[in-house]
Length: 139
Image (cartoon, rainbow, N blue to C red; front, side, top):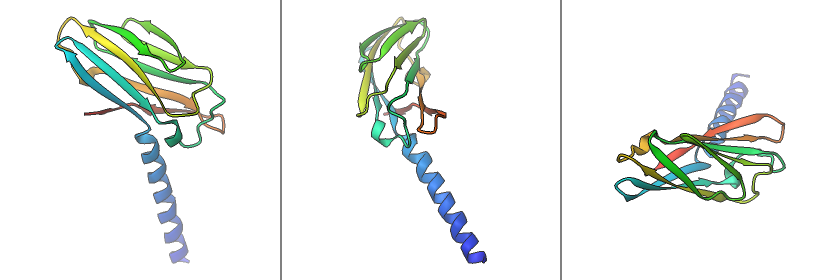
């Protein structure tokens, strides 16, 4: 009996760890310094790595940038992009079914701190539940 319980707990733990890790790296950000006051930002969304995502539902990607920076969207991958103050919000009525990139540039009054750029992807899973993935910086 205890052996079956141990196997159940081990399987449950491994499933949860692998689920969390597979979504963890599904959305990443690469920041390249173009000039002292200018950055190019590339957010990669690996739709195929997001567990149970409902491709018929909406998705929203939000990026928060440092104050004093001007943001310009270069490639929204079919999303409706809205820029307000220090935030860009990209909304898809239906998220693309293949992996895609969102690209934007930042021009700042000072040399920007890349660690101040934060964001997340909100999406719906097949059971109708809203989920969020925090975007990771890749150096």
